[in-house]
Image 1 (cartoon, rainbow, N blue to C red):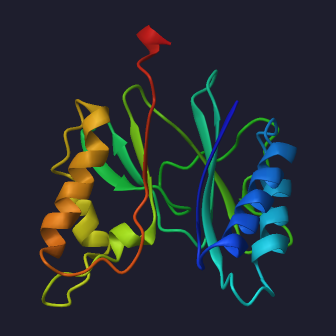
Image 2: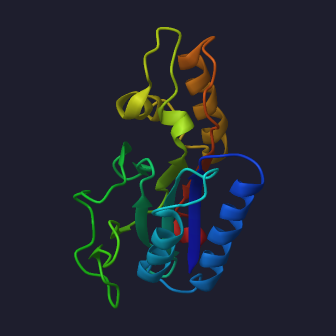
Length: 204
């Protein structure tokens, strides 16, 4: 069982550090639970209506992965949709709640809307060689010299040019592609990228 989270907190300095510690503690409490419901309720309480004037909001992409079945459970707390490369199809798409590949039933796991939150818990089964890219909105909301935003469609177009046969090169290649799009325009936000790959079953 693995838990992967990419969070983006608005603000700077000590206040943001405190928010990161709170998120880390929540993850530790729920690290062994495949069901993300309690974790997301905790995140909702911690960041749903923040009162701290320095930390304005936080978004998070929260993933749980069970290696024995290759099932990936994901929930987005206002975070940009992850990119999903389906190796058997050699195609990129979005990993979101409405994906037609969502599992209808996972043993012992309640899917759908998490009570007490606005978040949905969704599961898919990854195929050998599949890739998932998590990123912050500093990537998808990059703006070029003509003040045009990259956006989701632009990001999907960039993903289709990435070297999927060499996952370790994907992060640098994506950052370089975003930089080419921006040109001389200044970056207005931090950029974080996390690349995940489902290992080939023959190497598991």
